[in-house]
Image 1 (cartoon, one colour):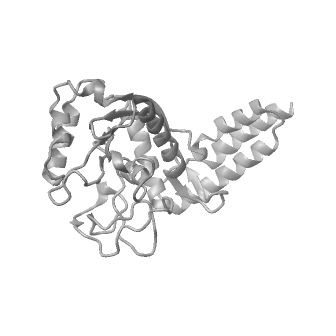
Image 2: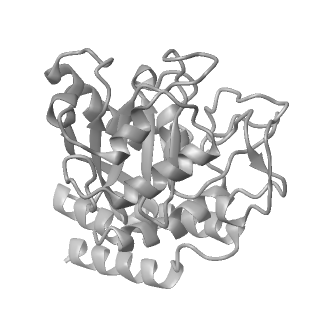
Length: 296
């Protein structure tokens, strides 16, 4: 009886206290705190694992499991020369990295972070799987031309036109492991790129930046995929901090940016701080739209 009443009470608290993502970011933060407190109380009253699982199911909104996103990887460069087995191991590790670091700043948590959404490994196409496929999209992202605005727009158009399921999974977030190129650094360049793409996001991640190498690339690019813009500031090491193109109106959302400034004088920082409450709100608003657009 105790377990049954606990679960009912948990669900009642959830319905009464949560209309989770709202327009006011401070309210978002407060309701998250209330939800986590209720979730903690629910767990404390449990005597077995089933009860704890039911608590988790009742409080998905604040435990990061309300929205679960499958991820498809596609390795498009022969420069990534590890064995197939090691590559798959690393790609699965990328999901672990995302779930650990694509998180909100939350001092109430033991590690100071709270999960917002959850990612899961779905599939991977290795270079040997796709190297013989004729694809305008692959040709565009692997060509030795600068990743300027024009090229990024061409990539988006060709991504949307891609129909081969080995290259683009329409029911997943697609991450392309590539070898970035620039006229100054040539193939030693290691820039990343991502777009929300009308809630059908994709990410380009240089193979040399896997395993959380060089300024938190996984969560930073995923931030762009979920609609976040760069942050220009020397007061925070926020995940989205960058020395590059940022909104002139300092909007956290790329959709709300009026115009952009090309360079930030403060540098990229370490990007070790989690998302703030404004970014949390934007991510969760877009999470619902992405979830619906991918028909998950």
